[in-house]
Amino acid sequence: MLITDSQLIREIKDGRVECYAELINRYERRILAFILHMLKSYHMEDMAEDLAQETFYKAFRSLQSFRDAEASFSTWLYTIARNTVLSELRKSRNSEVYLEDSKQQPARISVDRLPEQELLRIERVHLVRQAINKLPEKQRTALVLREYEQLDYKEIAVILDSTVSSVKSLLFRARHSIKQQLEPYMLDASFDEAEGMG
Image (cartoon, rainbow, N blue to C red):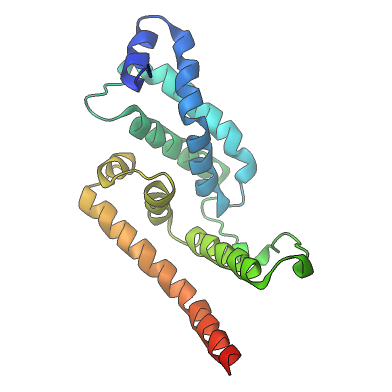
C-alpha cells in the first residue's frame, strides 16, 4: 500500500525523519528537471544538482510549518525550488545577462547515419527548446510546469504566487510567443515539402 505524502509528512513531524528519504525519492527527478529548465537560458545548468539539494534541505527545515490544507506537498516543493533558483540568479547577478542559446552549436551527430525524418525531428526539438528558453522567466516557468510537469492551473498559480487567470494568461502569451518564433521554420518546411512534390 502506497503511503501518501501527507502520511509521510505526519510521520516526519512525529520524529521519523528517515521517512523524508521517501519524499526525496518521489520528487528528486521532477525537481531537478524543473530547476534545469529554469537555469538553461542562463547557461547555469551545472548548478542544478546543488540547487535541488538546497531545495530539499530548505523543505526539510520548514516541514514543521507546512500545512497540507493550504497546498499539496509537490506544489509547496516547486515553490521552494523556484524561489531557490531565483535567489541564486540574483546572487550571481546573472539574471540580467542573457546569452542566446543559438550561439551554442548542437552536439555533432553523424548526418549520414540518421534518416531525414529523424534529422527533422531533432531540429524541431532544438528549435522548440530555443523558443522556450527565450521566454520571460514567469512564462517559461508556467509553461514548463504545465506541459512538462503536468501541473494544473491552481498548483501553478500557488507556485508563481499568482491567480489562475494570470497563469492562463501567461500560458497563452508563452504559447503565442513560441508559435511566432517557430512560424518562419514551419513556412520553410511547408515550402520545402511543396517543392519536393514537383
